[in-house]
Length: 383
Image (tube, rainbow, N blue to C red; front, side):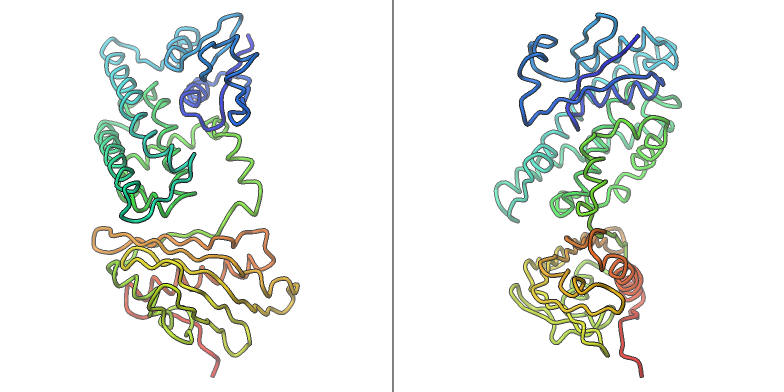
């Protein structure tokens, strides 16, 4: 029997079915419709599903047009391993969690992730749009707390065995991770900047799920396409430090000489331009402060660059021009979390390996040492 699932890349409902197929080890063919071209709203797809929604599962003349119906059918057609339990009590628990996730988790997730992932919404701080997004995020946090409580009883959502509940919830949590990775500034403001700090059991569960056979193949195809393009990946790292958010903000505006290199002057206000020079050579970068939110955000843009490096092409000299360094700061218990992204610093640049090593040294190592102990390891000219 050839089983075909019609889907849209990244759509969570058909993704549930793909996860279930992976959990059962069932081979399948995937037909990815282009939502941007309206393929799910036109023929020949409408002949399969007049409602124009995904998923649609085809198998030996059977057409199933709903994700939960597809999960139930799969469990009858391929009983092992069971998705809905082996006993009536198991079935009751699994169905309860599955349907709550379908209703409440999906609604809460959509309210946050549709604006962020699909519309790339980045509301102004304090705006009505931001207030509405924060209100939606509170519901999503409540659902994540519910998942965290479920995982006190076992490694999976319904206890000790994998179930339909895991298949339904995995896409939602993985989409949150995607939003954090690609839109970290907005997600950090919504309290999702570094999920393992907030929901450690959910994070461990997601890691277990991700390592199961076939789960990697369920990831949206367009994610894989983007990840194979070097220019789509920026340098990103996250630190947890002992200092408070205000102290971290101070280090990233007025304290560069303590962990990176000595600028010609500190950063005080948006619009300030500061040059960072690495003596004894002539390399320098001039940054303009684009956004400064005390205790929360530092965003700088490189407006001048002269990066001299022996053995590298001349193109390296100005590769940083137009790139942005973004530090998002948020409180954690007994300290702060700093999520850093150098937007535009990607593996496609000639300087990437050199600059990656540099940021690892100064951001990951030196800044953390400075904020934890008061003593960093900044660049100094040789004596």
